[in-house]
Image 1 (cartoon, rainbow, N blue to C red):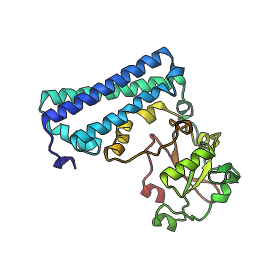
Image 2: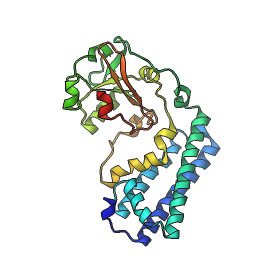
Image 3: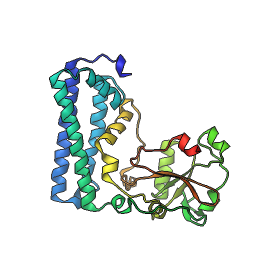
Image 4: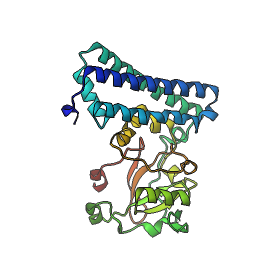
Length: 274
């Protein structure tokens, strides 16, 4: 825990300065690239902002913490120090500028999240809705997967007859690599045309996926030496597509609708069991 970590003012100041300087360079470069051409900036050059994940992990490690809240607990202890206070204020201002820049990218490109946001979501899905099976590549229907769960996420979910099915928009090869990388044993259905995604108002957003706070949240993984799935670049497809969690009954009626506000936004088990 952060309370048990002994960090000097100099160490904290240096760590904040390094994170600030690296983040400023990333944002400045991104702004310049976007000003030249938004179409060329996205989807490839925007990836420069992903460097914040590594910078954030190095920041956490230098303070001996594992996540942002623990880093915040440390800098609050030193808030009486004018230098530390100024650095923190500058960091929070940079976070605001970072997020505002991404919002301008979403506006400029009229991302699908902006187009679909606020629209009416599907109240049900037809059991005849077709997918591609993520293992066999065969055409299947949703109705084949509605009913009593065979692979419960938790024992308590099994008692509620919940079956977990992963829906993805990528191709069969990417699905196979993803399963190998993650060790997932859940059924996977592929929706390459994103028809179901659109039914639930799920679009792509650079802001919601690459916000400053979200990337620092991702930094928590390398900070504890956890690796992300190592997907080949040509299989990454649209990493800015948002997802969600949806609970259907045996007829396809939507019982729970949770469109994610960020890649890591998920409903609680309590919400699912209500």
